[in-house]
Amino acid sequence: MANEPLRLESGAGIARLTLNRPEIHNAFDDDLVRRMTEQLRAVEADPTVRAVVLASTGKSFSAGADLNWMKRMAGYSQDENRADAQALAEMLRTLNRLAKPTVALVQGAAFGGGVGLVACCDMVVAATPARFALTEVRLGILPAVISPYVVAAIGERAARRYLLTAERFDAVEAHRLGLVHAVVEPDALEATGAALLDALGKAGPLALGETKDLIFRVSRGPVDAEMIADTAERITRIRASDEGREGIGAFLDKRPPAWLAGDD
Image (cartoon, rainbow, N blue to C red; front, side, top):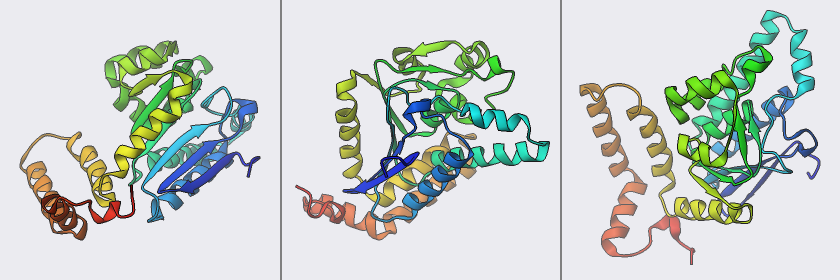
């Protein structure tokens, strides 16, 4: 397991996915993309998993695409390139829409596709040495499949600077842009992530997934009759669920809800 390019560890309701190619700055290739997609789908289907952590070993979070993979791409046909890009797009979509909260712990540099991974996670904690860059234009290519998530995270205005200039920016600037939620010293990275996971652990598991889906719905499109009806239907459904009834009942009875049974 120590030599696996992607490690999965689970326990206490948390699944931790760790990019483990420190010798090449955790760059990813088609094999790692496939593994990541499979592992994400597995943890999503696992009812014992409440939240997911994405982390990396070594000095870098992820340098994006592996150079050897890029060399192979250069010889691909158009159809092969399309299939390759679609596989990466599906991995990012799976991470972004995972029905469980995701927390990224960024200890070092995240470039290109590495920024895409960060942007797909719900919560991001970055250590002060972390650096970010969207470098694709310097290679004569586009940050295409990561762009929906990066632009959603930092906004169109900032994207028109950083996607076009490929400038590097530090963790403080990433925080200002909205790409990361907290910047901490390296020795506080794990503890800060643990505090977020502790807060998530107090929420109803079904409510977490439903709320994440709600955010996607209301952040896109006008507040019209259709959206109003949709939000009313969502709260109607969750109130009538076993979890909703238990949560409200526990609050009224001044006792912990069933999903916290056994917690200290």
